[in-house]
Length: 84
Image (tube, rainbow, N blue to C red; front, side, top):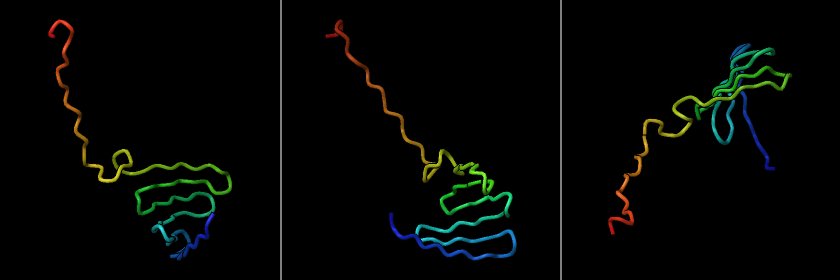
């Protein structure tokens, strides 16, 4: 394990901005419910103190460049024993 440093800035009672080496996140909520959105489009909803949370990624399948589609491989006709 390495050393992690996080800087948190509170903006009011229910809004906090977190800055780490890897990115930025915004947390909205209080003691009973929190909603966090980070710069990688990941959203976390949690009930603090219970161990219950739900994570999801916004966008298509959570892949970077979500609008790009991979091309399906082209089918080539295969030879059978009767064609040889």
